[in-house]
Length: 246
Image (cartoon, rainbow, N blue to C red; front, side, top):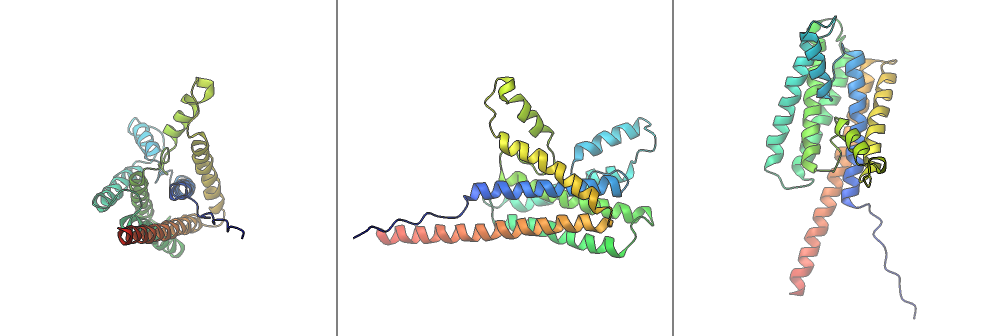
């Protein structure tokens, strides 16, 4: 009698899936930052380092540099991060229902904003453009805080300066062993690719880049939530099995 071969679990490990999902959000951030900087008066709505530098140069008398929108983006990014931090603080480590809710908020916010930008000429008045960049920054703050809570090593989804530093300083050229080089390189490449896509969407219209990011956020939210539910069912079944064997 031939023995049946045990079926291998075809699922990607949860940690690996989380890495992939955060890389998708990193790409999405590149799209949003390109839309903000090129389409909304040179404002970074994901990379706050850029806004801080812009504000510093503007305060020093930099010619034609914006002040209001980068300042609002900085404030609202912090508001979004604070709100997400409060929601996630009482939840468990890793992905939870609270993680799904914060990322769903990002998805719905970006979707609503894409519709708003498609219907309203946000360049017609200063206040309309400022509302757009402030909402984008709030969404990115929520996303960044959620990514931080998931603790995927070397992936923040909104900034790659530390990632570039780690890639170079830990490389074999620097005498290191190049840990996490693949994910570090992927994060850098994806945020750049996202910026390319974001710039290209502006050739169609401003709303398109926001809609692309909303779609990506929705895919990440759905995939992460489905895996969370599957893992929870598996854990419940395993606990029930152990209890029955006692």
